[in-house]
Length: 184
Image (cartoon, rainbow, N blue to C red; front, side, top):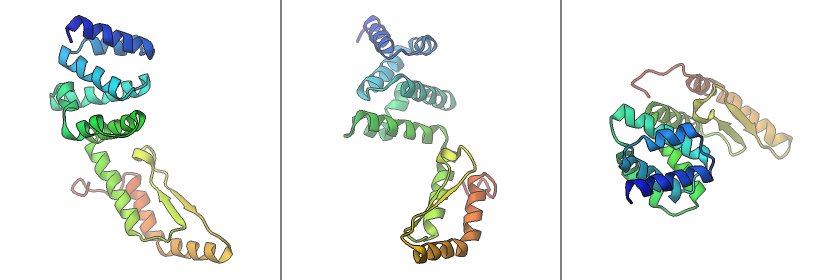
């Protein structure tokens, strides 16, 4: 696609989705290859403006940190699998954002994975669900109990009590304390 046609296609996409002018200007300021790669991604995943902005910002931050152009980032195997894969466009857009967050925040990804492994290792009964904060956006952990009757509820509470120390340690980890840089 020639540069003028590419710019027209970007403007049409942005107008159809009410992309803020500031983001459109940033997009158009990129080199032709990066502009085209972003347009291909946005079109293939039928992104809404909000998801596009989130992806664009993450790609821009990764680009600055790694001194890599957007088209090179979007050509990475882990992202190409998402872009070229099966499934709904909104589902693939969510997967793309998640993968970009892992690239942008690798330590956060390692931390959330470790917390998930720690929770799974507790071996809690089926009626107990422990949820760490999504992307560690807070230090709040949730524990849900689902019991059928008083006896089952008592058993679940006793299982929680036996693991109270481990749960408290995981809560500290989710809150950001208790880590060493080697562990993350």
